[in-house]
Length: 302
Ligand code: C2E
Ligand code: MG
Ligand code: MG
Ligand code: MG
Image (tube, rainbow, N blue to C red; front, side):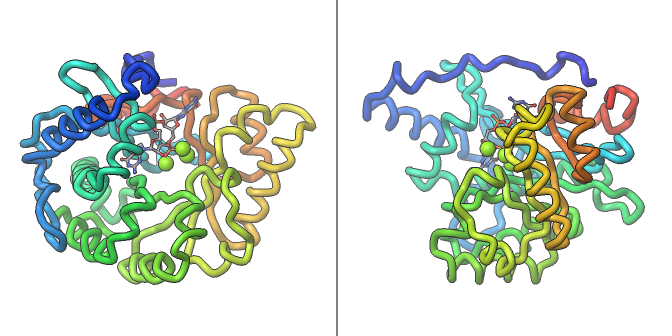
């Protein structure tokens, strides 16, 4: 298990304490400023800078390893954004992603995350043919409103040199259920580029099985809520098993989210789940610590 390092507790931004409109406008202005100079604020169609080092340095990516359950090896990382606000301290994505979505800032933010994660993936050798390392990036439903999302993704891949199949884009079920035809077209374009597509928090939304068959999805990520109480003959265990079997019958890989205990790890592995993430293996880590984990997998007590 990775050490407590990177465990940085959030001085969680409490929306209840700052619920005013003025406050949200201030935070949005701060986010805009934090994004300036990252190269992601360029106009539509631009692929943005891929250096990503110039901004104010307030936005950073942490990386949580993805573990193959059979072998216990690290097969990749999920990039998770954090905002180190100069006054408010670390703000969790759960608190500022919705703000970014409602202000449109999610587009430059998402583009910066994509470029930075791909650049980091290449630095870790994800571009080497013999190095199987997948970088997963969360994509907000709002980013699918950009019909040029495939062009942006293609541009970032070209700029960074990350092979398309080493990038996995994670989206929630809502992307399948809203603006279905438009989003299907975007997803098919992304598939044509060769990137992988995953459904995040699977099981919490309302996607129908028919949609699942229609959309070119490669991976189902089993929501943490099903993993939490998986011990014994609980309904959650039955649901987790059903999702794994669904993935198997549709030819999709399954990833268990939020494994915290050995018993959960064993149960998921027994069910035939392919991959897993969770505090049991490692918390999301700053890039240098995640890189160290890659060089010394023994640091991971899986
Ligand atoms: P997600 O994509 O489902 O990511 C998993 C979340 O669960 C992460 O929270 C991760 O730190 C946390 N987690 C991982 N393992 C465990 C565990 O064993 N136990 C528990 N209790 N939690 C675990 P985080 O980093 O706070 O991110 C929250 C959500 O914010 C993400 O959920 C994702 O929806 C969103 N998000 C994060 N980064 C980005 C981004 O770059 N773009 C977009 N659009 N959304 C992002
Ligand atoms: Mg995710
Ligand atoms: Mg999730
Ligand atoms: Mg989530």
